[in-house]
Image 1: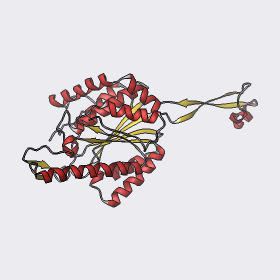
Image 2 (image 1 turned 90 degrees about the horizontal axis):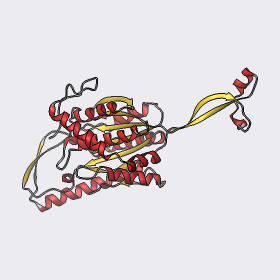
Image 3 (image 1 turned 120 degrees about the vertical axis):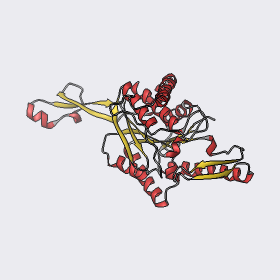
Image 4 (image 1 turned 180 degrees about the horizontal axis):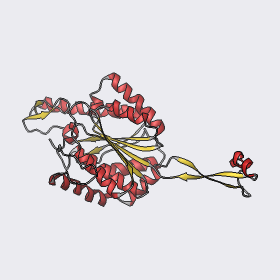
Length: 326
């Protein structure tokens, strides 16, 4: 399995990262910086809006002002008409919720799912910085993980990417209920939230847990703009014919022998993957949140751009799935 048990330093430096991790983080920075384009920036800006109209100041009434904007308390105190003025708040608070479950360290193609998550976060963060939006991070697994307050500098994004790459992989089922309950309790202003995960924790949850997750996502989606980013690897949907192989169960850590030479086994594997994808798509649609699928073998930008284009055309948050480029 991929991954590391080393963490970034508290001040965001690379002091505690080994050479291999530092090289991976640097490669992600370079790659995502190249991928930031006008199409991504324009799509992001047109797809998502800030929290709306915010109060700016109270000033003296001028001819042509709407009488409904008069502040009668201030008018009475000053003895002359005073009006409230407002401004449109276009800035967003982008918050990235990233799964650190052990299954995220799996990958058979260009990158692991964890590295794909880091690339996605870096890409969206650099696009957000272009519009002066703040970016924050929350890591979650079997237990609550690191919470990184929002910032709007390149150094902050570099720290964010390092934390995603260097986070301790968590053994056991990812606790979506706990993570979402914490987000619902947080009464911060309107956020744009991306849940970046392979959603294995949701798929292996009990029926009662799934009902709770759906309820929490509906509440969160009513207050914020929530987008799910399911990560997948081609191996998970189609077994190569390579004979007997040993796989690790990401939840229990136990080894499992799989006979890939068997046509029946390969067929059952594909059918199971298709059923999981169908269920997850249906579940997220019921939660009324957007979906951008990403693959360890695909182009990271195309699904994002398609999602932005769908949102710009006025398609609902729940109706458009940014399909992965194969």
